[in-house]
Structures are given as C-alpha cells and as structure tokens.
Length: 82
Image (cartoon, rainbow, N blue to C red):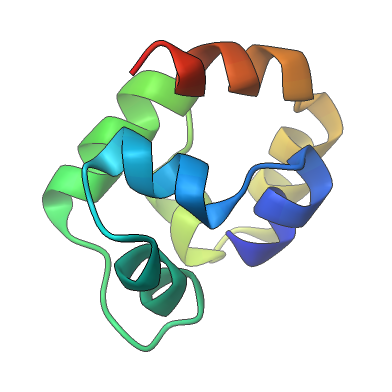
C-alpha cells in the first residue's frame, strides 16, 4: 500500500478520510504496525478496486498490474466522493 500511495499520489490523509479513520491509524496499517480490518478490505475493494492480496502485497503480479493501471484522476475522484 505504501508503494501504491506513492505511485498514485494518494495521501494517508485521503485514505483515512475514505476509511473514516485517523491518519495515524492508516499510517500504522500501511507500515504494518497495525493489521488491516475486514471493513478496510471491503471499502478499499468497493471504492478503489484493491484486492486483499494487493493490500497485503502478497501477489507481486497483482501489485504490478494495479500500479500500472492506476490513474491518479480516477483515484482522486473516488476519494473526493466521500
């Protein structure tokens, strides 16, 4: 997720707003100090199309595919609708 945020220009603050959480909580999740919750997976999938494996960075091919197709404008549109 850290790489995705950097690649797409998405801030932790924007993710936090989408998830209804504190920026520090999202930072902890992205940096693997705190586990992502089921609710997080559902919202990230529904709103941004990100899979569980992608969020966990389990499937390198999935990570590369999503990063290659990520459009900052599309992501920003999703984030600003919340």
